[in-house]
Image 1 (cartoon, protein in one colour):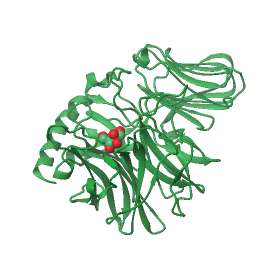
Image 2: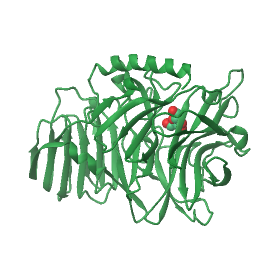
Image 3: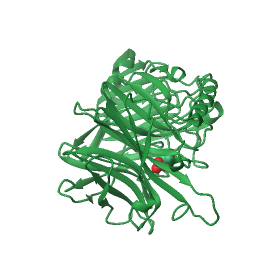
Image 4: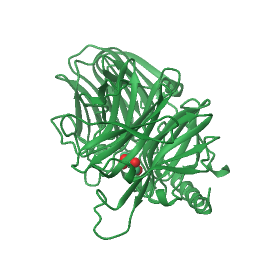
Amino acid sequence: MNTKSKNLFQVCRLLEDSACANTKWRPKFHLSPRTGWMNDPNGLCRFGDTYHIFFQYSPYSTCPGTNFWGHFTTDDFVSYEYHKPAICVDEKFDCHGVYSGSAIVKDSKLQIFYTGNVKLCGDGYDYITAGREHNTVTAFSNDGLTFPKKRMLMANSDYPDDVTCHVRDPKVFERGGSYYMVLGARTIDDIGQVLVYKSEDALDWKLHGRFESDEKFGFMWECPDLYELDGQWFLAVSPQGVDADGIKYNNIYQSGYFPVDGFEGGECKAGEFTEIDRGFDFYAPQSFSDNEGRRIMIGWLGLPDLDGIYENPTHEYGWMHMLTVPRVLTNRGGKLYQQPIEELAALRRTSVKRIVDGDAKFSNADVFELYAENISSDEFTIEIKNDCKIRYADGLITLSFGESGRGRTSRSAEIAGPENIRVLCDTSAIEIFVNDGAEAFASRFYPEESERGVKVIGKCASCTVWELGGFEIKNKSKEE
Ligand code: FRU
């Protein structure tokens, strides 16, 4: 680590101590930045017995800035260690941000890939077709904590001629002894697509193909991910520039997936796009395989460019945004289902279980999990903290807020009828999983501390509410 990075880390520590002193709206079981701004999860992997969760981190203000990679580790998704930022801006090729990327374990090392963002100074740049470098960079670590050497792998001149300067967010995986990298791209014609590179050594990369939709679907596809689940390949992307269409695509930017056919035969063909989460605050998810057959996905429980759309008042307390809980993905007939990772059950404390027939008020809990199953009424409503409603009626499941939504009104998805609903409610975030995770909704909301409890209206054979404990997070950054 060079002297510039060391000095930056010292400043981070001072800021982190003061932002952590105020606990209002601080989540209990979601990872949030100790200070400043957090966005995409990066470099998700299991290295030895330890899971690594890096994230886009701009510690100096509650706005996105010159991002680093912040860093948490865990062995069980309940107790965490917070480390000093793993990668910092300290080279010419990443001087305006260590942008999003991924990790692989190779030759007993943790190897990461990211985009080095550079904004050139000069007149007349639009920063789309000129004035910006998006360099693909790699770095290696023996201990998973320090990445002593960075190496640039590709520069703008290495990408195809018909793409703009926007080529970023390398996601790398190994398949059949070869390595593949997907990169999000914006073409000169303003079309979002994904470039696929292939390599035998994860250092020397050659263009292998491209994914694009039959018709234009947004101008930029950020944060691509490509994986196989039970015989079906999926390409996940976060497209920008897609117009709302009824109840679909209602957020400023979207996140979802295309089923993919023929990838292993050398084809890159994407099917129809499905949104992965229908809530107000979900973007840039990344997944990894934990080598035990689980495909685990974490999303950013936030979105960029929300000014004037809805509010996130924690900037008053010096921090912004959080990550979703890890979700396990499964493929049911070509559709992705998601469930909170089972390790979270260790957070359950006292519980109340009831049959609901009419109207049932549950505990006064602030931070809780609710699971309603065998729902049998045509209408079914869960009311949380007097202001958040999850309601099923007429084939639609709808999440809505009053004042606590700070501008978030309602989001809906079609479902055949609710069979079960799981809700994870944190101090200022909620995640909802409907029908075994066929639909999911992630959202921030900002109830006052005096607003508590949950009410269920309808009929179900069993509804359980557990009060939840919080994550234990050890701050290791001071010793590092
Ligand atoms: C997605 C994104 C990525 C980029 C990163 C920068 O939220 O815009 O495309 O790498 O954030 O923080």
